[in-house]
Amino acid sequence: MRVYPTFFRLAFSWMDAERAHRIGFRAIRLANSCGAGRVLQRLTAPAPSLRTEAFGMTFPSPFGLAAGFDKEGHGIEALTDLGFGHVEVGTITGQPQPGNPAPRLFRLIEDRAVINRMGFNNDGAAAVAPRLRSARAALQRRYPGIRPVIGVNIGKTKVVELEDAAADYLISARSLAPAADYLVVNVSSPNTPGLRLLQDVETLRPLLAAVGEAADAAAGRHVPLLVKIAPDLSDEDIDDVARLALELKLDGIIATNTTVDRSGLVSGPERVEACGAGGLSGAPLRKRSLEVLARLRAATGGAITLVSVGGVESGQDVRDRLEAGATLVQGYTAFLYEGPFWAARINRELAKRPVRR
Image 1 (cartoon, rainbow, N blue to C red):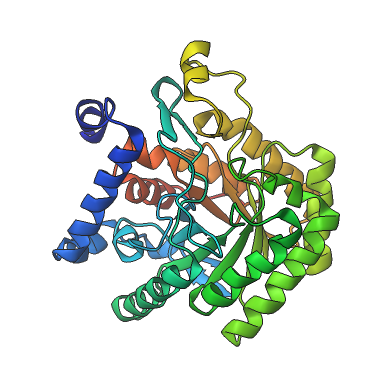
Image 2: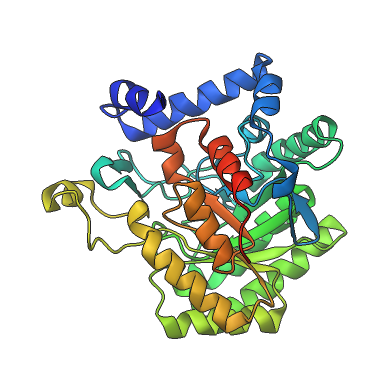
């Protein structure tokens, strides 16, 4: 019997969503710091059959935690104790910023969804970089063979004008790339004004080229570079991004971020409107996320690594993405509803039935 859904209903469903997140994340980190992490690590370790090659690295599992849960690199080790094959930290900006005013995180429980307008709240690249270095060293000690992978997601500081966005991204790239296993340029959050305009290929081309060059120079090695796109792009724009990724020899594309679309929700219009603006994530994104994945797979012909995220809840969801052309799959929103053993359960489901490629 699964206990967590009942626990969630009694302990968290009535609580402010951001406060519940802080409490839950603190509990996960506490388990690691008091020594329980070693026990969890043994219980949740992905089966060797799930090891996945991507970006010249071996991931313990194709399933990882998307950016947004650990925005500042405070809990990387603790999260890998739960069975995630990789943890993507961020979104991190060149300058520290508090994000948007609270309340800014809302659950739509009937839809198993979340609306957020967090606004890239984080301590800034300079403060996060030492945490990444420490976490990476700790994982190398704890996992002498195949260790979980650390991704780093970077975005634009809100007060920086769009014409100065590239310089702002470069601050983050130079600070964070040396400790990152891979780097993601986030141009698709709806919560930073104007950010999605950077998805236009003529703007995106010089930005990605500059970030890639700066990251490699700072790290003294090639740091795999990915771009994260929105589900709200038109099919033609998706094709343009795919062509650009091939042209620039990017290492991958992450699809997709949250959506501004509110169609097809079970929650009543008044409830949805009360949440206000922000990006919607969770189960309602499943169909569009799969459509974008299929479009990218067709446009790239398998020549680039695709990471699928959006509406992922179960082992079958992960299997569907892998069979549709993704190499890696991420989740986040369902973590809030499914609890700390969610990743381990997905890994067990995947190990029971091999993926058909």
